[in-house]
Image (cartoon, rainbow, N blue to C red; front, side, top):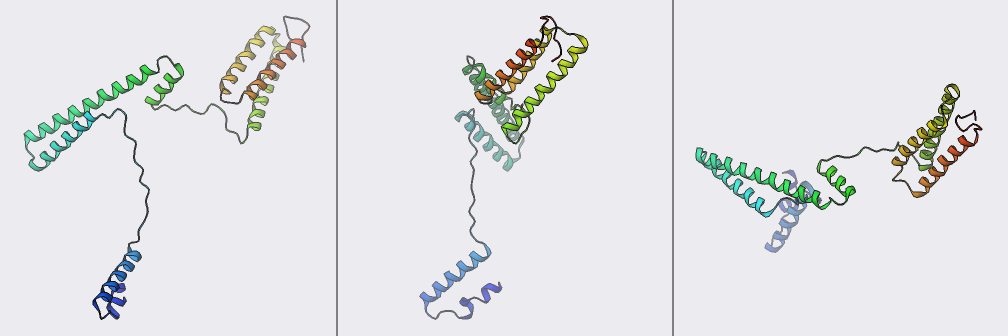
Length: 219
């Protein structure tokens, strides 16, 4: 209110009509820009569900129409019609979702990888990260190397005390290698090749250090 009173439109209004109209428009625009400036917003439209068919849209419109009719009349018959339309609409939604999901699964039946991806997406399942967190690939590779080194040292200590056959060691080591290999499927082929050569070298070292083919001697 004070801005209007202190404006030139009130204090020094133009004497001619054209000047008065221009002063009125400029004063009003200045007050609007001061107290209610324009703001730009970004509207993000939600993508439509692929299972939502035009038939479902008609059922939805019919349900809302009956809802408006009942909100004006509040009669028992209109409420019954509204409930019936609502139940019919919900049943149609369930059927449409079932048909759509069935078609997705059927289309991926010959591709197991895509099939599991589709099933996980429909069930809203997200797999937890299988690899440990690391700042760089070199640190991650070093942690894997340390893991294998400690594992070999532990196995070697156990073999010295219990005289376990080499075959059991190889089997145990291969199981560990396969488990690690499944974790590294997303890595580059270079790291997989390096891992393969490393494990092969470890096996060769363990076997060549033993003169007896049945038992492993100390390294």
